[in-house]
Length: 304
Ligand SMILES: C[S@@+](CC[C@H](N)C(=O)[O-])C[C@H]1O[C@@H](n2cnc3c(N)ncnc32)[C@H](O)[C@@H]1O
Image (tube, rainbow, N blue to C red; front, side, top):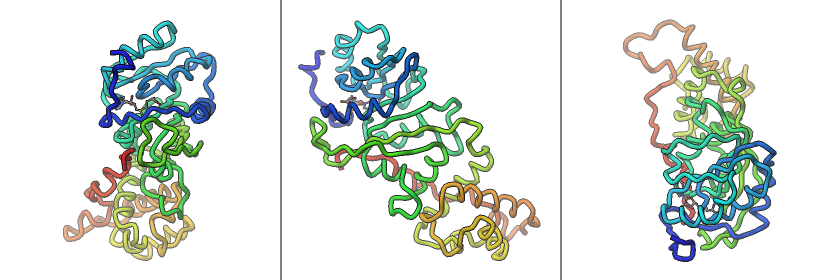
């Protein structure tokens, strides 16, 4: 099917980026160099693909879910040997090897796609991309990159900022798309840390549990959220060592401090006497904390 015959599908999050200045900003932020391979999720009708192919990259691997766009994309780009298209779901197909990812992503899969591309704190991707430049719903972008103390600061902010350097590139209002989405958007840049700079796996797991526990009750002071994990004096000692107050709430604690807190609690829990059968399971970071609270929040929706 040609692009002219194609009908835009809302369920695939199809909002074509038509603003030349935003396309320029995305490509400039990606800083694509000679020989690099770039992955594009959701090329659509190829507005961004065309720009990517104007850079000196060695390969542009694109993954598009909508079968009806495949023919048009082949017609438009097959003359360039660097272009390769894979039809399928970016959440499940084997992704083409790449150094960088550049994409105007379908907002309804933001959460799982981020997990696939950047990984989770306790399940990081083995070989991180060097850089990702993603057009996302502004609300999600803000949560990814915001500083502690901001109302948008959440467990997602901590996780992402422990996995990489996250920065805003530019705001993108609805008029930059056709059809315009109902929500504001923004371009963000993520530079994942190399494996040697990531938290060690045991600590990452403990931090993940801690984040779930504390952000499930984000209005509670740490003293209350953490009470019962270790004794009150021990908890105070750990907090003072990190330079945080137990009167603080989760959204005030910086990403690195979460790791230090998890490490301190782990150490305290390991060195304390074995709990009696009555309070077994209460002294260590609780692995059964409710996962649902954070579960779906990272999934943005372009249509509000
Ligand atoms: C917001 S549009 C962006 C299109 C184009 N890159 C642009 O900037 O104009 C999102 C694109 O992702 C595609 N898409 C949606 N879900 C997908 C998935 N799970 N895997 C791969 N592509 C997907 C849509 O069909 C659509 O082409």
